[in-house]
Length: 183
Image: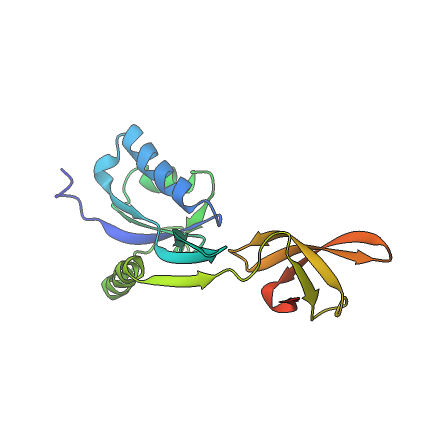
């Protein structure tokens, strides 16, 4: 039956960080409700990133387009409603005034899928220049010149949570990598 149904690519807006959970949910719900033949593929575009931390390299998949999931589907019957009612789904990227989702153009699909394949093959090296417990000097902002201790490193946002001693009290701050330098 799946060969008889014409399927097109759509982009679904999601809550950032929930992409893989929503992908699994779409696959499970459409299958459970008898619409498995309508959904051909659900894709969360990712890229491989090599992180260097404490001299050790680790490879990790990172979501390339946070907040978006691509789905090749035949939108008939309850399929649109099933997808839109999934927790974390905001809606379809392009909808007409009547609320009908518009599919991606073939050229856009080819470009995006080519880019996804390319990202899966290429490996981007990201060196994490800071470690928890390390002392740094603040070089930007109102506390310029103060020294601080790194409490947490957020690699995704390239931010640091540091403790700065101000007037004898430790104060937590969130700073970007560019606002500090190693001592």
